[in-house]
Image 1 (cartoon, helix red, strand yellow):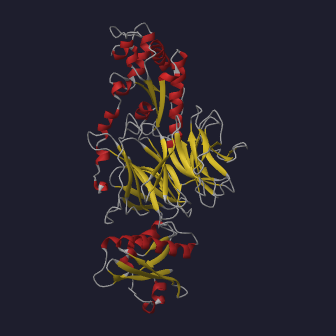
Image 2 (cartoon, rainbow over the protein chains, first blue to last red; image 1 turned 45 degrees about the vertical axis):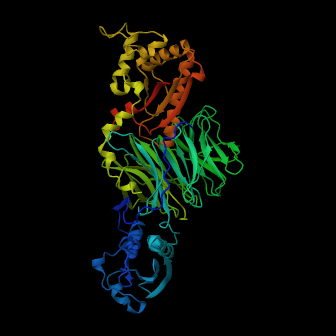
Image 3 (cartoon, each protein chain N blue to C red; image 1 turned 135 degrees about the vertical axis):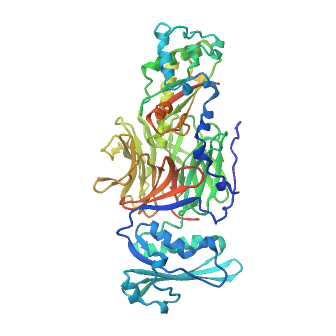
Length: 431
Length: 178
C-alpha cells in the first residue's frame, strides 16, 4: 500500500522486427525426418521481411526436433503450384515431405497465406489450407501452419502458435535490479512487457485458456499472488496472507489455484477457489510442502515435500484426506514437477553433487530418465503437446532458457539478448 | 516501448549488485564474509584478540554502536538446512536480549538461500531459516509482534558468484532493525 515502487507497463506488442530470444539448436539432429520447405512465393513487392513465413515454418519444424528441413541451398527446385512438383526428383534426394506455399496481398494490410504439404513417396497432398493475416499476425499464421504440419505428420497437437512467459532480471550500472515479466512467441519474437518491478517477480503460470497469468510479486514488499489478464492488463490480487504466498498452479478447468501458504507457520499447500474465494488446506505437515501442480484429471496434485528429510515428489488427492504417495526415490533432491497434458510423464529438477538437471519420470513404469546435463537447470515446463520441455539453464555463466525433447535427444538454447532470464511458462493456446 | 533494446547491461554490472546489501549491514557480515562468524565466536572466548573486544550492552543506543555485538546481523546456514548452527546461536541470543530489553524495537528477518535448487522450494527453505531465528529470538524474551519475516528464497543473493564461497554467503537470514 505504502510503496508503489512498481510501475505497471501496459504495452502493445513491440515491433516484430527483433527477436528477444535467439534460438540455437545445440544438439541432436540425427533421426529427424528430412523435409523440404520451399521458400514461399510472395506477390510482387509485398514481402514482409520480418515475417518470412516459410523460414519461420522451417525453423519451427527444426525446433520440434522431429524434422530436419533441407537447407535452402540444397533445394533442387522451387515449385509454386502442385503441378510444378516433380516427386521423383525429391525422392532421389531423400526428402519424405515437401511444403510449398505463398502469400498474396488482398488489400492494404490484408494478406492471404496458403500452403500445401505433400507426401513425396506417395506423391500426394496431405494438407492444404489458406489463412487470412495482417502484417502483425503473419508470424502467428506461420506458427499455426507449423502446428498443422506437425499434427498431420506426428499426431502431436501444436505447440508453436503459443506464448512463453518468463521473468528477466536486469541491472543498469549503479542501479538496483529491475525485474520484468515478459511474454513472447515460442521462437522469441513479439515480446511483450507485462510487468516491471524493483522487487522480485516469480513463478508465472498461464491459465488453461491462455488469457491470464498467475504469478508471485514482491511489489508491496511481501510476496503476493496476482492474476493478470494479458489483454486488458487488469490485475487482481488473489492471495496476501501473512508469510509465503507462492507457487500458484491453475486447476485444469481454470477455476481454482493451488498455492503455497505459510500462514499457519509452515509452508503447506492450499487450494483457492477463484470464484468463491474459499480456501481449502490440502497438506498439513511439519515439513516443507510446496510447488504443487495438478494432474490433468484435476483430482490430485503432485508437489515437493521435505517430509522424508530431503525434497522429493509426492502425489496427494485434492480432497486432502488421503495420505500423500511418494513418487521419486532416486537421489537426494527431486523437486518442481511439471506434468505432461496426458498425465503420463512428469519432468522435474534432480539435484546431485552440486549438479541440478532436468529428469523425466514415466508414471506407468516408474522409470526416471535424466534429459539435461546441468549444472544449474531448473523450472522445467512441458510444451502443450508434451514433446518438449522448456527450462532455465546457464550457458557460459549466463542464465538462458533452453528446451529439450522429452526423450532428451534434441536440445536447443533460447538466449536472451538483454538480461538474466528465468522461469519459463508455456501457454497451451494463443489467445 | 522498446525496453528490450535496453542493452546487455545485466551481466556486465555484477559488481554493482553489492549495493543491494541492506544499509543496516554496513558493519556486518555480508561485506566481511566469513569473518563474521569468527568474530562472534571470539566474544565467547574471553574477548578474543587484543583490542577487538565487542561491547555487550542492550541499551537502546547499542544498536547504533559499530563495536557492539549487535553490529553483526547475518546468520549463515548449511545447504538445505534451516538449523542455526553453534557459531550463530550466541549472535542471535544477543539480538533476542536486545529486543526483550527494548519493547519498542522491531526487527525484520529476511530469509535467503543460494541459487541451487528450485525457486519456490527455496522460498520455503528461506522462510524456515527466518523462522528458526525468530524462535531463538523469542526464546530470549523477544515478543512475536516485534518480529516480521519475509522470505526471498534465492531471489536476492548477497553475492553473485556461482561457487561454494558465494553460495555460503547467500545462505543466510538477515536481521534488519526497522
